[in-house]
Image 1 (spheres, each protein chain N blue to C red):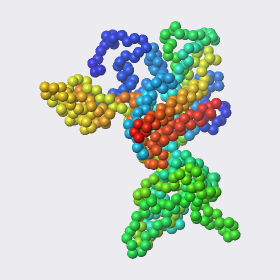
Image 2 (image 1 turned 90 degrees about the horizontal axis):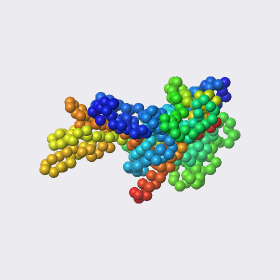
Image 3 (image 1 turned 60 degrees about the horizontal axis):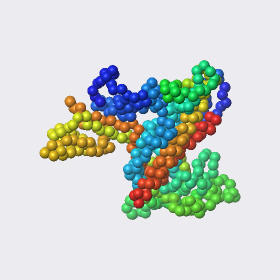
Image 4 (image 1 turned 90 degrees about the vertical axis):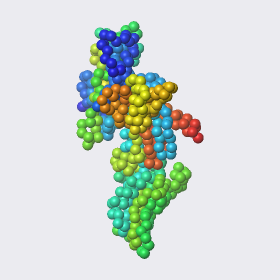
Length: 368
Length: 139
């Protein structure tokens, strides 16, 4: 691969197939010591038309080549491989996961009493960032003109105080109480004879609704510290949670984070034996290489774990270091999604794909 | 002037429909880059191709050169200003010699969107199946 061959000496490639070096350019990013090359994806269907090669990815070809392999799946986290997909789609899914999947988060805080050291707005900001254990698909959006009701709002109450002559106490999220019947505070009106209105109009209790009664709507983690109270201080407030997306405010982002990386490919260009093999194995901080015993005390280096490669380039640094070629496989993505708890990570990915489909459908209906 | 739609507007010549710019509101790189990818993949139906110089369509199986018949000459997107939520997608299509047989850019864009939708459905079903298999295997 590093030897230069004259164009007239290259072996004949049958029409309809790409020669080896072009195929390598098309499918791999080569990470040289100074910078990566061939990073662009060759998208255009007619890019290799003079060679008779169809570069397009039709639906049949896509369905044949597309694979998903799950490495790790737990309640909060998933790591899986997507093979045969392009970077533009993978990035679209990542962007949607971070910014466009709706979640529930506290938006309005009605302060009754706050004598703690944490200012009102700081306390409200902290309440907004608490991850709630509520499935956003069961709720509707609340817009400016809507009335808050049991279908679009979740109401929580926080009422804590610290008695005089007692030590400082900590306010944790376990003390946020869910009010399934809606707001308990009354709206102030000048008209004394009018019926007393509360801030929300729940027509029925939320825990009577079939989907919600299966699991009470609390917070996901009980031990997050909201504030600390000294003796004689108290906090009394009501918090209303609504549905929103991460684009508007990061509190509505359903993932701790979601990211992907391309599959690393490490190729030994020559046979590395003996002392050089030991040196190479020791250079790599993540143990990509390993020693293989050939018998008679002979050792050779092999690539044991290319997936762990972090592209630190230690193995190609220095003079005369042409033993290894580092690269990335272009259509193979290792996705990791860490959920904050409202939706499980595999559900999150499916929602992200659904949202991309909805965007396409919306545009299609506009154009027709 | 084209009819004003809420989320998308097409700017182009009324006589030559093969090239136009689509201005989308409330969109960003997420959709635009994915659509650019599927637009680049657009090929003509392999069995039927317009013949040069006449309005009939012939089968060109024997003609090896034309195994690849892309429909798109140029496609790209730009975001005029990052503070505005607008994306401009430019599509220029090939089409044949006589302009009455050329693909209007709108149709190519619609086909690309359909393709993207089908790809997403495939991703979703493959992923769902793999997760179910994994859960069953690792009870």
